[in-house]
Image (cartoon, rainbow, N blue to C red; front, side, top):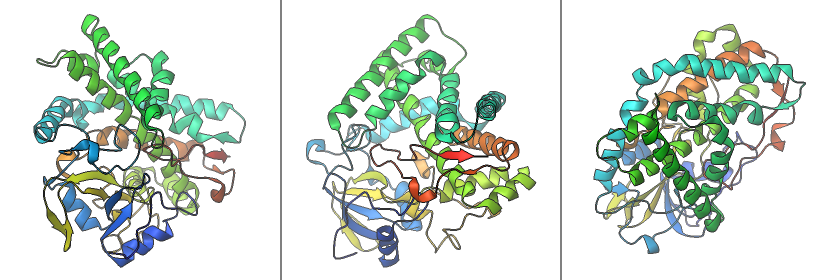
Length: 392
């Protein structure tokens, strides 16, 4: 452990640079006590092997026996503090996965692939019809995941701007009142969606969930809210940072242009490299335990920094280098174990569609501003870019 306690968020020279503070922590050891952005103490895990092991450790969880006293990662009501009932957390999580997993399997989502490809084409058609420079965040990274989750869940496209505003509010890590308002609006919309799907079901995921035995209106609304948020927010970030990583490594962009068969492997590499860490997946210790000899007390907040873990030199040779031909390794971008992201197949599908078409249709695309003029958002949970100016 280090003798001083740095505070989140860690400064980065630019969006694709590892924070010097984080690099120093990782070099010093796998576990460090830090301060979160709200000033609470937490344990930051930066080591790949330890982060992977702890993701599957049922001695950790998202709930806390005394949530009002628990350390917080941020002011967001979504993931800033404890979530769920301490006594029933594992059973509740197992039920949620059992309800959702069948609808997000790779086999089930395969039928959606032509529509994802078509939506990507439509957005790139609109981009090509315009005059450069353009903001690729606004034109592609943001709208595509929203359109896709609308298709999958059966959400009217006319509502997409409304729920995007609510998800941004709920993800606010600085203003808890704003976050609470966003979450309340999302849940209210989820209730309306459940009523609509029960009255007039369609061929979509929310209709099938609402038709499931024993799923009540409140549970259906909570599932709708969860899917609306998680189903697009992180993919927006992954498209933006993945594209930025390729644009700043033109040899890798060219490798994809020459050999489109590399795209699936490139997606795994971009998932690994794009997020540089400096935060983490929050967990609370459900009992006293040790992590690499460091004693952790029951109730302590542990942050599993998956971005740092994905840049662990003990696992990934030259980890900061983007190499779309690197043999696909078991990165932790989607987590691991029982909480592995159920939306991973959908995110991969969208990323493959984006990079397969983008490098082919815009072979000369490049950044329109120096990378040092771009910054990651520190005001919302998922972070990511607020803009990605490009030209061609």
